[in-house]
Image 1: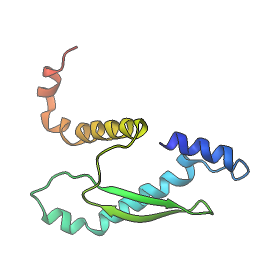
Image 2: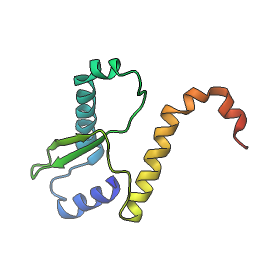
Image 3: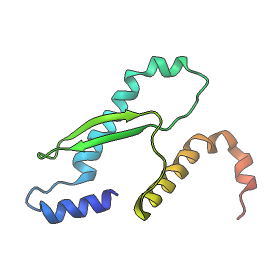
Length: 114
């Protein structure tokens, strides 16, 4: 998780003052946007799939710069430890909230127990 990685950075490289939220995440987000824009036309033409999961692999180098290694259009959705399980559950929950909930609209709100 980013929390564990931040703790590692704070303990091992306190003199650098790297903050994941301020220094790495904006670059990761920009890279993700750039990759989507690079294939935008192809995505628009493929109307059969309205949603998908992409797996982005990043590398942080010795100077704490963020690099894109690869993008997977069929990423592994398993887990090897409890931390990954929590992250996967959160990611899948967010995915459904973003892609399915808007399609259900008011019907979904009526079906949820209070």
